Length: 486
Image (cartoon, rainbow, N blue to C red):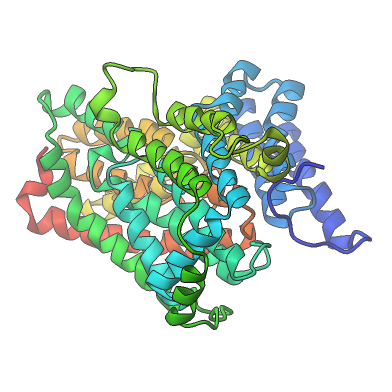
């Protein structure tokens, strides 16, 4: 039997609530898509229905999370409200390859015992305090995400956190407040660090291109980006970190061990074996290749981080440090988190459906007219709309929708769109609530964290981000002349 992501324990007999949840999803889809109603087009209604169906099943889990991730394929092929060719690429996305490669490399850890050594090193360095662990992982993920795409950061950091959790006896992340909290801190840090520099991901480069082509007509310098977005980044990161340390402690029990204990356990393992060194080398080499992509992208244009991780994962099956393979397929098959790939692909597919059908644009258009009511109102509206859209589709799609709208609205009114573009960019990185909202969120969900907790805490975090972005953005517009330049 091939295991997938963790799933909450259930009684043998399904409860009435479970049955209600099971039927609520498809009923909401049918109601949204087929009931006679004036207003949005049929494709948009189907997109809304699919969002409600998948959201309901992800939050209530009447079926496995991975099964919900496969829904777009079945529903789109059956109902046909968008070409199936627009959905299929999500299940062969390059980021899926990245996750497969990273998962292969970290599976080697468990086979050779490197996961235990890494866990002990993490605990000895940071300590067993839940608060210190969350602060440390959040800051590290945030810093890495300033120069790496969020999915790369999440795919490399979450396995380390999971290895540490397993060492202290936490296998079921769904039912573990500590497990869910720590994985969420990595996902959130990976999301928020991404808008400080243009290197934080494709949406930043896309936003730069929109501004260059339609507003400034000159090069958008990296230094300009960083100086303009630094106040927003610092304020949002500080606010979310404060939220994490003041609320995520609830229900969390300390691991109950001191730093000397972990150091003794680490010393008891002895020096690293040849097998462990190979396992660490392959993972570190893949990570370095991901970091150093700019140094060889012209020489190997197709060798992106995804294929670096996959290639080195395949090397693990061929290397024989002690006469036998570092990893066998039989072991990998039994240990890899296959459901992770379905959850991630499902979130990506849902985002593609919402984008292709115009559902995301429809949701955003509902309150955009209120932007004309004044400077503060415009900041609130564009930040709120962008943040709402970012909860259901990727930030790349969010930027592709919202930045052109922002530029068009303000240029048509004779107002510089630049400061509002900065606000939209910041808000586009604050998708926390659903697996479809961000690649890092999908990675976290795929490892089996509690999706109800992710939704509730993600909603609170999104509202905090909205308040901070509105306040800092409005103050920057009023008090900082440079904020209107690019």
